[in-house]
Image (tube, rainbow, N blue to C red; front, side, top):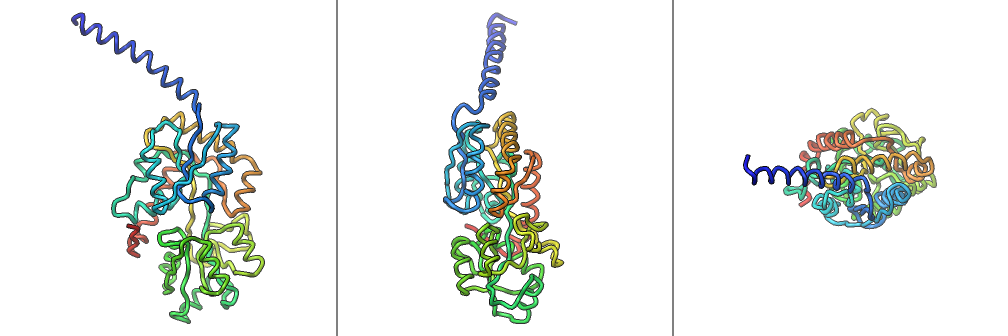
Length: 328
């Protein structure tokens, strides 16, 4: 080995010895500036109801978390921004089934790969859909609704919060499993659909479970027939799950979790996951989520989060393709 080669090897060793501790130290100090939480929807709704309390609980655990609403493209724009962000742990996506399952399947050219382009951190919890009807409709449970729809063809339609929403897919899954034919009436959000249901403009709605919906049911302004969670909700134990009606495949849930850009260091992923698990162990935060209709998840790690995303993609792909859903 000549002198030039010796110097090159020595310099490489010196650089490696200096740079490696520097990178480790940077990760050890994480976070040393505010973290951005990208909420891929406009302000309001379940994502804000989950993301903002989470950000507040992170203050003593991680430091400042700035919530940024980046709506558009049915959540694709915000998700794409995170996929392109620097993988340093300072940009995190509050992602769910819309951004990571439905949009990639139903788009001809999705701007990101939901499995390859993100590092899963954890799932915060799940929200479910509910099949609700106007009180004037003479049905008291899901089986009676199916029987009424079959006996009165062309008389019913169902509303949802929009084409490609989990509520839309829950409605189409109900139709597929029961053979009923009730047209879909998409709205621009759950609020307008609920307004029309209460006013009697539509008779059936598939709606995300929220504290407001539960209160409207209890006041008699609408009637919840079933929820699409695997079991009854803690916030509404009197409402049966759809699986209790014999429709064992009628499960439609919106998971909401934290995702970082691909390449984010594992030590950073673990830091955020542990802080989140600590926050979710707080009974006050759990109750806040439950009251809003959101079921908190406890101690779900990165690997389990990834498996959940992959499983949901496999589960919804056949239905999305069978109804010809296209979002572009």
